[in-house]
Length: 148
Length: 148
Image (cartoon, rainbow over all chains, first blue to last red; front, side, top):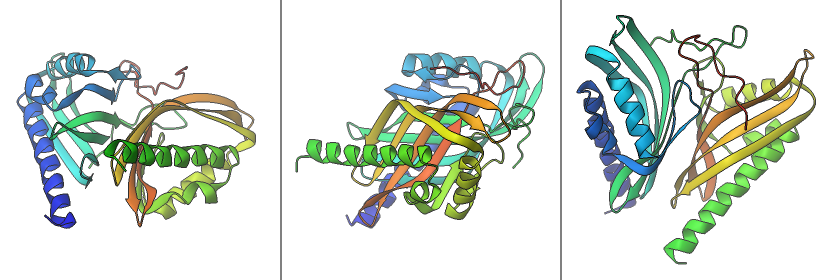
């Protein structure tokens, strides 16, 4: 393969992994979601705490989040940009979720997402994920009304 | 070179780039800071707006931030983890700044940082940077009192 076609192949593999993750979230399938995470994954999530270290902590967080919705979860990824080398890759995007929380509150929110990948034993895995909203300097409030 | 030593070489080049950026911030040298940024860099910053797209926007933001301090800037990077391939790499860390703002307010804060790199014409450049603090679900407030 030429370098160009090899790069395209890696990118399409990453794109498929991301599509699978979108499907796993919409299906509330934490097992499918976690199957792409490396054992030593480090997550910087939207809300406290500061970080989740390792796939066990990430799994607990994913299960907690997915089960906080009643009914379907709407989940979308926009402005996705993927940069892939032979065995290290990253992407960034704006991700949105909508749905009804178990407490009855309807939510729709968007955030910034960065995901970093490494090919381990021939398979792309998520090594690091960073999700956040910016905050407003004056009020100190997180910007939870971002729209796409 | 073996794959192992090549990987170590790329990692040490990334580490040097990060060291140079720490020095540039402490020196309030936005030109040095920006010299490692790719023209199409995309920044997700701590505060609004949602994103800064391109090196011109990133430069304006860096100049505004560096000039918002009077006197020296204390800047530190902790828990740095670098994953480098042949031409794509990423790192994550906890970054802290301390100093006196021009308005007289003393600040010391820590945040989560993810930086994504690509080798362009044989030189590592920053293609993407994501800095954030998590927020508290109850209050909606950004967590600005993170300590290391």
